[in-house]
Length: 601
Image (tube, rainbow, N blue to C red; front, side, top):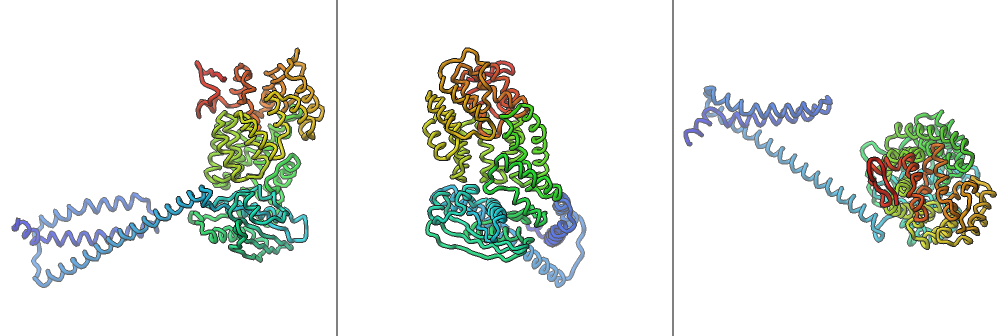
């Protein structure tokens, strides 16, 4: 072995190996730095490394087969020392790179652990940091500018909602406290928020003065405050600055990718942006009049600003709501509205997400447009995307939970409704939705309490009392309410009269008046199949599902006889239920039988 090692030394094998290692390392560093500049594909660097690895044994073999040149001992010594020094330097540099990489990994893991810990903390009531943005006060001296201060409130709320580890609550509920002079602790408790943001907006021409302050709700401590004197053209920068400063004051990581901002979609001129804010009512309230007014503002707005994604998403939303206000009128009118508005809702929603693939509101509006057409699988896909982008969106959570309720996944729906109410504790609509599902699952007392607490749902209360056999009380409720704009006082009176005759059965079910949303009364006067009539009629116009939780009523025990009929199964097929169940699983009420058939209990 001694002779072998001596021969290795004589043929300079050690020297060749050391020289090859040094040169290879230098070349690898060169390619690693040049490749990104020249935008070379990854396979180039990998191929280069592979060639160097293959070349090492070839270099050793070549050195072995060639007779070495004789060098003087002095020259040999200098060359060996130089190679040894270079090799030591390379080893030290490689060691440093590995150590730095390891520390970077530990830092990344530490950051990820911090994010995970923050998420756990935010989910734990005892340690959660939750924030509510109270309506900014309009100090412009012009009541017509109220929409701008309200709009700034919602835009800042939306920016804060993009911070993944910050719980932003009460987007709509906060507007319940507009103009009220209540102490911060009481508001924080009502909104279940640990911190509150309040502020003011003064707009004079194109000049803005916006004041914002962050307050700890339990003791009223002011944690942060700032004034912004800017031009209207800086409105997006102000929103970004406020949201970023609040996150910093709360020591919350923004969680943004390189190049991302909390306020996107700035491709709109100031005047058009004011029109966009004007089209959005405070707290997202949407009645027939608001929907019509919003469409009149938004249609010319997107014509002038075709690249402004939020306006397209809002337009998709209001188009999708339009059929709700025609469902109790003439069937031909509903058919016309469906044909026009749903196509526009779908096109507007797709335009929104084409412009901004990260816009949760666009996906939520698209999902709703699919639901009302009975395209339930497509709707779930869009809702899932919306929640992946904005897990705390009450709008997306509310719509998705309605879909789950509609298809019979009631336990999941109620759990999601609880999430919505945690975010929006004082919004009557969300409370009413939850009450509806509690009734469907047999929790009558809890449902009645929630309806009374919400101050809405007189018709739903009548529905609950009727299902409990308390027909006179149900009729009293119907007679005591002001008729909604979507059906007549005559229909309401006819429904009350029928309820007072229950449980007597009608001799001629087909002679009963058309009741629309009051069709549940047919269940108690001997005409159960006509209880399905409103859903069938709306379906004839292409309006299979309302987007709300109305279709979930079909899973209440009072509809058990209806569910066993062929007529019910026909509707389920047309409305997209069966397609959904075959893809996602069957609910507890229904199961497949032979062939393509199924049965519901």
